[in-house]
Length: 440
Ligand SMILES: [Zn+2]
Image 1 (cartoon, rainbow, N blue to C red):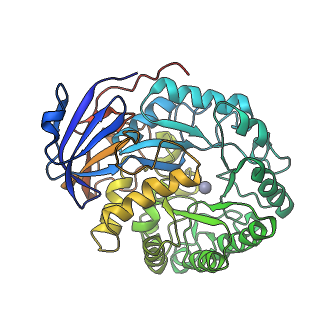
Image 2 (cartoon, rainbow, N blue to C red; image 1 turned 120 degrees about the vertical axis):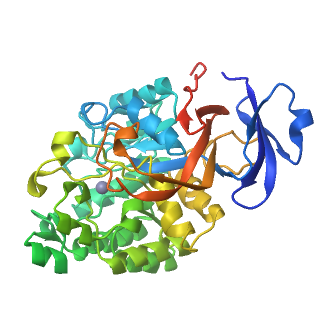
């Protein structure tokens, strides 16, 4: 356990009121003006000009371990997460072996505890081996030490409607949620980019928007029929937004996510033939980007999820057709959301806290995360310098992945400090030291 105390002086809480925050024994011990006198022995951190936010929570991270340690490990991925302002990540199930048993999810959970940079909450696979044929041990994973609540075959769509129905029914027993990678496989065979004007010019087979939208339409109706909880991963089209808006108006229990890259980048980048822009779902058109921003601002889309997908160099630095799909995102998410949603005037820092922390923690049923910056709450806090600007350099990142689509861009906002259970895992913008967990 960590008994050090820290006085965060003159921070702007959620970008509004300025106050001191006293962190002691892992919790927020006091919030108010001029706490200096009550903070004897505390390490003082001058936070004037910095915004204090609840630690970010990612519902969609590919940590690659076990099995693809050449791409990422729990250690490297969670270092990247801490540097990016996260205090919790959900580790996607498409590892090797797949996280489809209590044994694998407990292994990932344990690796997270040992690393000590953020909370690692494993996502369980919906079907055995992501094969779509047989339900995985959802109950055993839920009851395990990893307490899995989010289940996903992400990377692959649960396309069989009977399988999707059974999964939605099953997770009701333990308040779980099915996170769907919405993509009708028969409409996307051989797809290389968004289907549209640019794919026609480049002569590439495309993902049509309807492949995503038809699965979302089916799944919200299934969720309504079963009375269960559905989460839609990485929504990427304006039409998907309309379906989710319709479903929410009808009271269907659906939540949705958008990635930072879908908030900023468009299919026009594919004209460069640089595989760093190859991703699933693909970068879409300008109108889609604007619809996604509006939907995140008005709450139709609930959260930002990074879909951090590191790949080894050889899988991305090759010709377009054979390149792997995916982009890194943990160390740039905050800046991209600031650029697209806050600098544009669409959202405030309080909204930012909702979509990057409060709401994803609630969807994942993650206790101790996404909490308000109030006395008695766990001290999972990120301090951001909103006025800083920086140039994205993938070679300087903690992730093993070098496949950042933001490489070379100048973005606003830097993480100055990340407090995890009251311990500064990041200080002065650099990794400090991990948190040492007590007995389990
Ligand atoms: Zn996916």
